[in-house]
Length: 311
Ligand SMILES: Nc1ncnc2c1ncn2[C@@H]1O[C@H](COP(=O)(O)OP(=O)(O)OP(=O)(O)O)[C@@H](O)[C@H]1O
Ligand SMILES: [Mg+2]
Image (cartoon, rainbow, N blue to C red):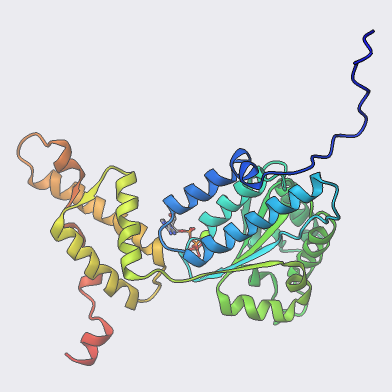
């Protein structure tokens, strides 16, 4: 045996320095953030918060490897914002990010609402909630419209039972499950007021602003581009008007309203092509949305608030 044989190593070696830039790249976090920037229009404050969270977690991880005092950070979050502002989409990216940083084992997202957690009869709620928690372990549990869990008007509401189980798991198994509560800002605020247990277990509150008209047009372009469709010049003008009108009408849901509008525009385009084309159609014809595919929408038949005020 040679005298230079390496001594047996028992504990993993503690590095003397850690290059955060290198960690940022090799963990894949850089890619997730770049994709987030590229795929999602607007959402500047949301993207900023996610970058900050990623930085915190990278530093935590480095500290842990260096044997510095460290505590698994609380990663439960709340996402507040109006319908269609990207909460579910961002939650999926967040799950991916946390997985790449090693904070969750699997990185999948289980999306639920009250009905998935709360039973109809005595004794149903606990097994239902536990079943969902089992599915979500190692990943992210996304509870949409979380305030419906709490129904103070019902004296014996089974929601309370689900809440208690959730709170316990959020505390005791926070190294293996991240819970994201999502919903409209004001209702979430009231929910936290009546459920301080949730508020104290949530470290990150991220607010999703409504999209501007310009952002919604960009989102539309992006969605169409993914599907190999495009708007011609008059159609772009029509969609710009559509967005301004749609915003003033009931049940406006930001990017979701845009997605639905584009689905209907494609339907009209298909019918227009079917009814008017005489010969073979080329790829451009098959992928062009024209103004009439947009302006046939019922949104153009309804007076806007300002038109109603000044007929
Ligand atoms: N910033 C964005 N850029 C591009 N597409 C977006 C953006 N935000 C949302 N979308 C798209 O809009 C649709 C609605 O988004 P999502 O479901 O994430 O919103 P949400 O806030 O969860 O809505 P809801 O309250 O209705 O559940 C999805 O198809 C999503 O891909
Ligand atoms: Mg959603």
